[in-house]
Length: 299
Ligand code: SF4
Ligand code: SF4
Image (cartoon, rainbow, N blue to C red; front, side, top):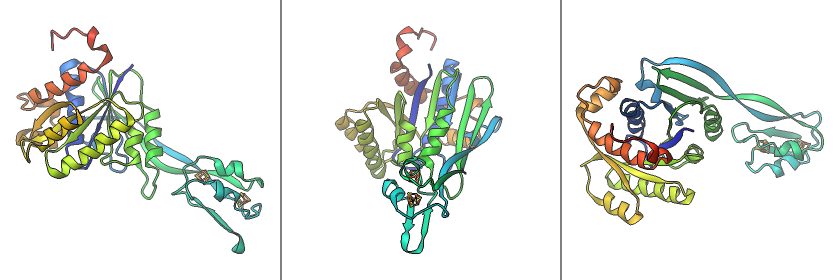
């Protein structure tokens, strides 16, 4: 069974996608591992852009079932709106008005059970699109993109995750930035979480929020300090207080950033970041159940 890693960050712009994409690259290059990279930032998926040589395997729309009121049958009793925990139904008996707001509906089905008049019927609304790619023999990439105007981020992430599995050694989820429900949806069922943080006051503040969430969810995790060397050392004092391991430090490197921006990840002969990522891979490997069974002498 594949080992599942989520890469998260308390705020955008910390280099979370850089780390996700780089880990996929290094796991293949150094381990020969089959990797499935999954972009869960459904509002702005960009992971696949780093692989211009990718081949599309499939693309499919994602639909959500939304109830619609049949005003011929509706008695405007308001039972459905009482049952709806998401305040998605408005019923105004005085003007014989009843409507479901598709942007608030979570397709829980409660209103359908509540209605005794059989006045609610389901219709399908497209909320996004799933795309699956392949890059060479050992890398799969999957992403979902939310339809403009839809607010079904968590629903779409769950639908995306249902399609992930199969024969990969590792699944790497590139989480949405921040601390939203979408991040929690991404974290369900993962084995390990990497928190990418910058050593700046804002970076430390947002990292602490993420660490609090991970403790609440009781998920194994560690921190990767990106752009290490800038800011100050406060982040390491905070991590000691949280008793959170540092999986690695990644200093800013202009050559790497330039090559990375052009999608040259796999062709870097003289790789300036290799030694920094080796440490991160080692920390991940130590936490994998198969670690004891692997021959480490070649790595
Ligand atoms: S429960 Fe049924 S009948 Fe009552 S307001 Fe809702 S849709 Fe209309
Ligand atoms: S399906 Fe659930 S969320 Fe949607 S309108 Fe009905 S009760 Fe509300």
